[in-house]
Length: 111
Image (tube, rainbow, N blue to C red):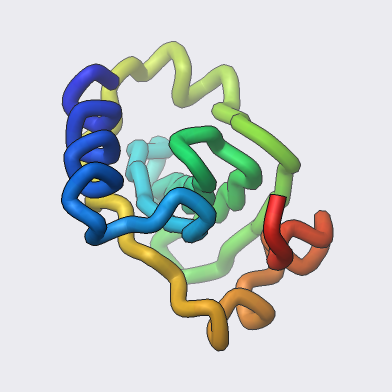
């Protein structure tokens, strides 16, 4: 958690990410048998504003859940650290409306 915060602070300080920008990053967790959970974590100003959870089986059949704010399923909390994750990427203003998690909770505008 500290590394993610430090990276975000550095990105804000260097001007790569502006304070009002919305970013998205992912965390992946195993779901036995042969399934996986991917969290799409949307953030603004270092705060999680929306979380998309997509759980897919080995046949790529997926269930999707959207939650305003921060969310992690109890099964993944018990797993501990994710087995894969990506860094935060700024979502261009012209692409915000394509993200269901943001539009569902009317989060595409400024805070």
